[in-house]
Each structure stands twice: as C-alpha cells, then as structure tokens.
Length: 185
Figure 1 (tube, rainbow, N blue to C red):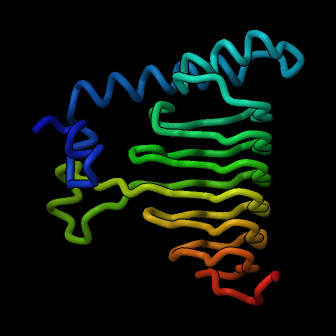
Figure 2 (figure 1 turned 180 degrees about the horizontal axis):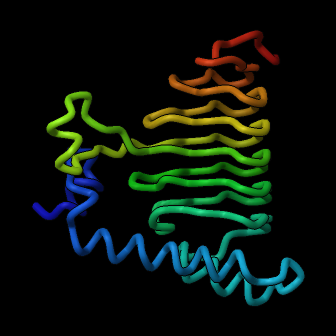
C-alpha cells in the first residue's frame, strides 16, 4: 500500500519522506501562495486558482487571504461559507465544512496526529483523521480543531477554544480544552 493510500485510510503513514506526498503538498503551497497574492477584487483569478487547488468550484465561498492548506483536494466547502483571514487547513484527511458556516480569523483545522514515542515520530510517521463541521456553525477567532472531531449543526465555538472532542448540535462550546457551556435550543 502506498503512503497516500495509508493516509487516505486513516493509517500511520510517512508524510515527510514520501516523494508523491511531498510533491502534492508543494503544489498546494504554490497555489496557496498565488491565491494569497491575487488582489481580493480579482474574483475571477482567485476562483480559477481555488478550482485548481480544490478540484471543484465552491458555491458562494468567501475565503479571505492569507489561506493555507496541505493538499486542498481533501477540503469540501458547502454553500455560503465565510472563512476569515489567516486560516490553515491541514487536510491530510477530509475536512468537510457544511452550508452557512462562518469561520473567524486565525483558525486552524488539524487532521494530523503524531506518535507519542519519539523514535516513531522522528521517522516522519503520522495519521490523519477527518474533521466535519455541520451546517450553520459559527467558529470564533483563534479556534483550534483537532483530528477526528465533528461539530454539530447550529453550534457556536467561542473564540480561543481548542476542540478536542465532538460537539453536539446546537451547543455553545468554549475553553481549553473546550466544554459544552450550554445548549442553544
């Protein structure tokens, strides 16, 4: 099994020494660099680069610069999504953003996890687990979302929170690590 196949199946894989994955990340970094240099008013050129990066044309996506991702091809944006400046999508696994999601500035979506023992970690091994953000979610500024997390429909994540576990639908979550503060319905 190739390292990319291992990555796509949520197995331990070598992200740092595999030529295929390195080349794909370099292409994504180049496309992000180009996207981030295009004037915000040049929507046609920005959308062209986004299409090349993501592999599809998102519906009514506002993606402010700077934006960074690892591969691009594993990110799925729903309709009417707003992503503020300085976002990072570490998309070794799928990152799915639902419809009508608002993402504040400086948020990170991290699908990668690393071994706890140094010798395995030093070999470049990692595992990627998907992140799912359901419809109508608001994510405040400086939020960190860790591997394998699902944030339920209609939830609000307070600024500065670190999401380590799933968040039930229609919940307000806050803190480090985040906890459910109250239900919104």
